[in-house]
Length: 287
Image (tube, rainbow, N blue to C red):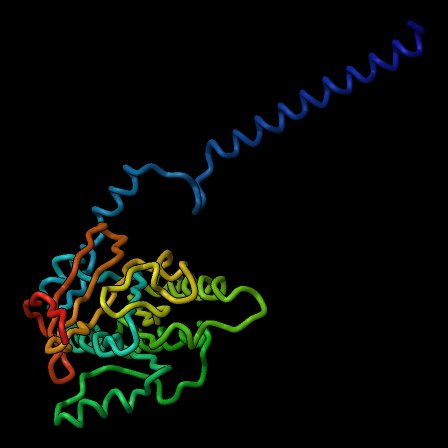
């Protein structure tokens, strides 16, 4: 081998060795840095988390006073996103208003895009009943999640509101050029982030795709996007009996429960604009 080639190869080997040493030194410096890393996103153990949880006040559970629902869910929690759905005419809004009545101590806020607040109140007045106490915008002037966030902040600081009802999802999903299901998913994720950010419980009412009326809908029946079920902490499905003589019987199905995984059905009776717990008889199949 010529001396010049030998020297060139030797220089290349030295450079490689030097780079390897420098890289090793850099890796050691990086490892040293993270050995003592203690910023906000530092790794901690589940033991540390358990110690922190035990030191905190007991988590607030917001019960509905509907025994079967409370036994399944053991109450709604702050930072949760709850989806309420069902076929057209099944009573999604009325059931949500029933929760408003039963959980009035949490100063409910309604953001009604579909059926105005005056119409909601008028139904009670027409039955000679006192409307339930809830708070709502004077006028609906926005349909984006940033406007909804402003109403959440306002409800918290003015009335100490902890639960917020939005009726309904498809009014606030932006119509863009991309896939609609992804827009639905982004909106649901934004609502979930708002629930966590402001430590409130958000109920979002949404529609189903067209399904048969003879059986309770499932998570697959949710309209437009599977992200609705994925982003929700709890999914509540309402099914109204289609059978003659039983039109006022409803089943309220807890079809997702991220907190405990416990699912089940609450059997309710609809009477004069209210839902009450009552035994659900066997269906009558003939008309």
